Image 1 (cartoon, rainbow, N blue to C red):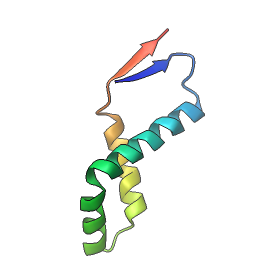
Image 2 (image 1 turned 30 degrees about the horizontal axis):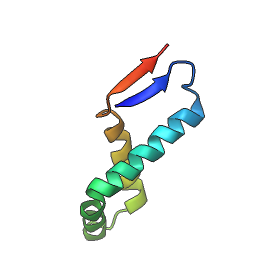
Image 3 (image 1 turned 90 degrees about the vertical axis):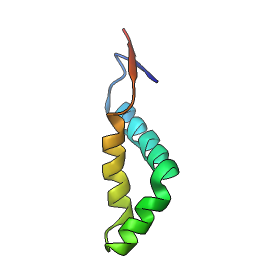
Image 4 (image 1 turned 45 degrees about the horizontal axis):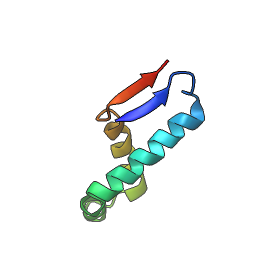
Length: 65
């Protein structure tokens, strides 16, 4: 669960969430994504970024107003 202050949804907070999501994705699926990107000649960082964006939708958010 991610707790957010409703008044703190600026660009910095969004970048912080994205960085957190990237770390989660890399920790959970990093080896598999690395193997896939090597096999298919794709950019690992781009794939992590795309998966991190998808991963944001799996979080449960709690907004404090």
